[in-house]
Length: 159
Image (cartoon, rainbow, N blue to C red):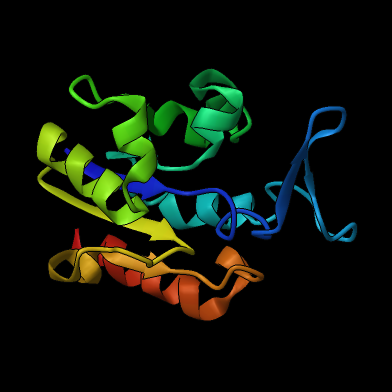
């Protein structure tokens, strides 16, 4: 199995996502829209039909796994097999105190994929030994950045 660990904020849209009890989730920059860069990911992954996705986004905790999954395009939804948050041996408190990199690494150790990589705008606390598995995007550009697209292409080719 080959896996992509996928974050949403700063990858598929701008990272400045706010949450309000009345408004729900919204982008701080009015000119931006949710999932505006998702078609780029669809195109990048199209030649790799066997690649599966594990959601490593905080959206799973904020809105639920099902809602987060169904916010994706149909092509990406078909690839989603779970999330890093759904770890049977990990308490919610323990999960919340871990860096994103450690959350992903814990899931990798549990699923044992043949190969994997992650796309995220947050490299804080990412294990140094696995830093080469991370495509770090710029929070305000995500996958719209040609350099990020090229890095994803390189990761996919290496799978």
